[in-house]
Amino acid sequence: MIRLDKNSHPQNSKVYLIGSGLASLASATYLINDAGVPGNNIRILEQDDVIGGALDGAGDPDKGYVIRGGRMHEKHFVCYWDLLANIPSYDDPAISVKEESFEFSDRFVSHAQARLLINGKKKDLASFELSLKDQADLLRLTYAAEKSLDNLRIKDWFNAEFFTTNFWLLWTSMFAFQKWSSVAVMRRYMKRFIHLIDGLPRLGGIMRTKYNQYHSVVLPLRRYLQQRDVHFDMHTQVVDIDFSLSEESKTATAIHVVNQHREKIKIPLSERDYVFITNGSITESTDNGSWTRAPVLKDKTTSGSWMLWERIAKKDKSFGKPGVFSDNIDLQKWYSFTATLKDNTFHDYMENFSGNVDGTGGLVTMTDSNWLMSVVIARQPHFPDQPKDVKIFWGYGLYPDAEGNFVKKKMSECSGEEILEELWYHLKIQKLMKPVVDSGKVNCIPVAMPFIDSLFMPCGRGDRPEVLPQVATNFAFLGQFAEVNKDCVFTVEYSVRCAQTAVYGLFECGKDVLPVYDSIHNPKVLIKAMKAISR
Image (cartoon, rainbow, N blue to C red; front, side, top):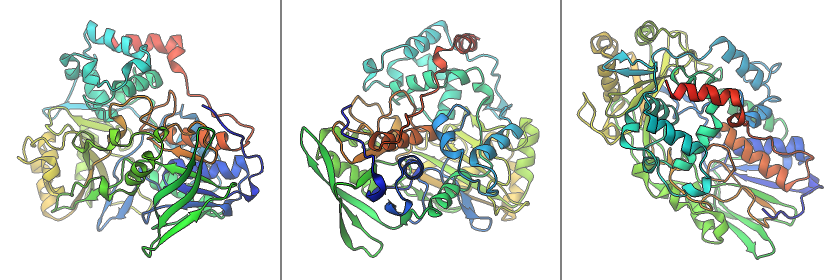
């Protein structure tokens, strides 16, 4: 990567951050703390009325809560915890988000005892059920050269039997990989998280935040940035960016926005100004259903982030190929749901059945579900305003176009009530839950997410733009669709690593991007992992 001179005098620079996901919030924090950019020179341009991207959580006990999904945490996310080490927590300004999260995870340790179910009963996970060929294929993949895996799917690498094993059922339900997902991305996951392989059946090593990630991470970051005078321009959609492009340099020269009044505005960029671009999004174009209505599946024409990337990608080949990630919605979508219950019956049953108190079990996957349905019961309360007598849980189905085992409809066509009917059937608790549902104490909001698995689509080198394209002078790409070597998409760590790479690459900070945790070269970790997959 060819870089031009870094900015060592940022006091008069203005920085525009497109999108308000974690990568943008992290970039703004590093711009202030490490690059010396004044907070009032930073503007975050967000097309929606809420910030946070995929780290979300909203609702109330009467209308129902909604969590579209949750991102995994673990202690070796060095960039992520570096960011949050100095951010005061939501509840207590005297402790950081990092301190709160580590203390919370020490009290509620992940040790799932009902990780996979079949016919409503716990599945035996003493073995990963991998044949010698499966084990050899995993080992061969882990040490394959990534450049040899361009555009290959997971099902191109493994035989059909592999997809019936406990290992695959644990893997696919935990990370949301599909058989047609990128095998190159799976390789990165194997290398990056090999220290977690032994604990995969019980979710060992997985950490959690005190509340949902919007309240535990996003709001503390927003408060921190607002106290430093960062501007949040909401309902402001970036529709295009002008560039001056040559072999010697690439420079962003203007940003075109549509504001909350639907006015078109051109923001010229001086030679001191910068723009950080979030290209693509896994949670854009989502739609909420209701207890009585299925959500609507939208396409990318409703997504400002995807359409912006398509426009600028036509201007230079180094800006990536968005269509690789956005043009196959049927292979990328899945549906999640959040249940709100003014009753303890379900939570009490699951605690007794699983042997896990809430917050210690994590995913419970119904392996015989045509939808491959999983549910998660977080530690209650999961929202700061959640009353003691209200419980919530989250779930998702990886195959939403399959017909349900009990409800003879596609999950994508089901209301919240119908999704829960299917869940009660798999858990064998239909009679137990019927009076609770009939009393009106249960709500469930399903969500259609057309791009949620788009970051796993088979791709090749160059399909994602580099965070800092060659000879870029004043712009960077951020988020899950910018290329970061060695690290894994669909993680909070990836977003923050993008932020460090962008800020430290464009500004003279006297810092280097923190290295990826390299457990793959630890002999003890390797031996433990090999013993686990050979069980």
